[in-house]
Length: 121
Image (tube, rainbow, N blue to C red; front, side, top):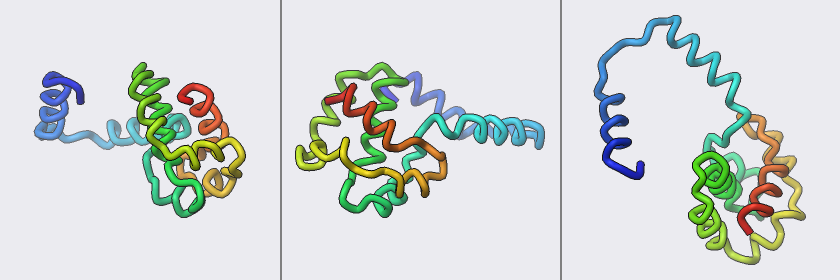
């Protein structure tokens, strides 16, 4: 949240006591299922346990979201640059299939990491 307007909107949403109908809940669940493969849910423990020698996977995917979805190119590149060079240097040679197999969002982790390296390095 980068300004008071976003903060206020989020607080209002939390404090709003309007109850969702079952139809509303169903529609939201349907939308969530339809779009879940287009974003990282940030469950770093899954990627970390699948790829113990390659940390930062969920962070890198978050940085890619900053770049692609929020247009925060400089921020994404700055954060990516803070990952130790030893890790950055092996990102394109890592086998991400263990993380892809465990990913609850069914993300193409290897493809996303390759995209991030291209855009953020």
